[in-house]
Each structure stands twice: as C-alpha cells, then as structure tokens.
Amino acid sequence: AIGQPYRTSGASGQVILMWNGDWLQSPGEEGKGLAGVRQAIAVTVGFSPRACKAETVNGYVLLTLSDQPGAPRVA
Image (cartoon, rainbow, N blue to C red):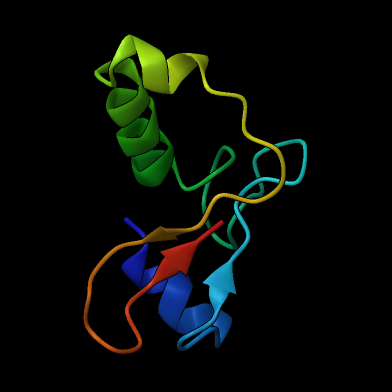
C-alpha cells in the first residue's frame, strides 16, 4: 500500500507525511490517506490494549514498515 507512493515521492530513507490535521492524498489515488495504510492503522489501533488507546500522543508518530535500510517510514 505504501510502496508505490514511497518510491515516486523520492523519499528514499525519508519519512512520508500522511496526516497534517487531515489525511493527505497521494497522486493518482482517489480518496485520501493511502487507504491501505489508513486501514492497517485503524485495525492496529482497534486491537490495541486499552492502556495504549488511552495514552495521549502529541506531535508526530513514526511508523517504520521494515528493519531494512531505506525501508518506507510514514508519519
């Protein structure tokens, strides 16, 4: 879900911003917010322990999609 937008963004090793108060739309995609990644985040949050859901988060949250060098990262 993130591979093509990551490659075409020129981000290579950098972070792709997905949320700035609203889901950002990637070029050529209908709708907002890299739908596959947005769905994965919703499922992960939905099945998180109650304590994790209750924790207040301020600022960016960085998700690294692999441990490999240059792996896609989203914020």
